[in-house]
Image (cartoon, rainbow, N blue to C red):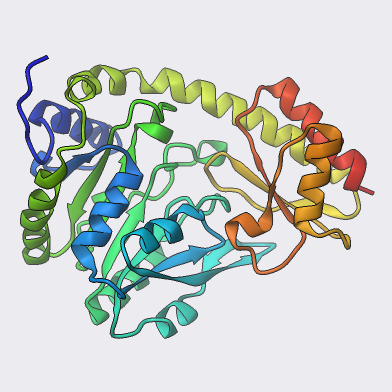
Length: 333
């Protein structure tokens, strides 16, 4: 119950987070860690750190719609760079278009690793090119890795924080919402990395911004170490659930001639492409009104055309199987 405000977060909690990265094979100095009340809080703080009103950030498309709203709330413009899908290699960043979108007002590039909803990890060559682009144009790189522990098939995802070669100013975001399945606990963090001079200047300014808010509750900081120690059991349950649901979905989709599941490398969402003439919104509303089944239409995530639904792989297996069966029963053929 004692209140000892610390803008970066209590040292005991930051050491616990550094221990999480140590288990992943990354050496993170607790002094490079800044605790926040979740990743949305972290985004808003970083947008205020990096930009002035009217400046721009680059975000992925398809992508999580919250980013554009957070940017607008902080008086920034969000410009979307495309992710391209190939049936053999999966998703990749269109780096040519990304670079063409950069203007004198661009301040940062946001990557989600793995992305929501595509489940695609940023590949090592892509990270090297992104680092070079950000370094050349003087941009920051914001890496949201909240789904990084949920790789499909047990394959570890990329871990940018342990790559000492990053020279651009880099901010890595994570937190308990996805890592622990505890969105209600409200603990996230920012790792500041990159070229030492840029990183040190950012740390000084970031500490001032966080001192304005002191938004992280003391009890969760004291509990951070014990909660992180229990993450493996929670993650095993989540991975078991999404694995079983993913296998069922793929087996059912294979029986159709007009549907396919797009390649997923991580995260807990699946994208189903349906080849028909039904609009995404009409499909989602019809399933909700007539079958009590909730799917996300592709335009929620800024897909560039109709014909996609996004499914959460987190529901109980019986509920998920029933929903998939109703979806396929109406629109599969």
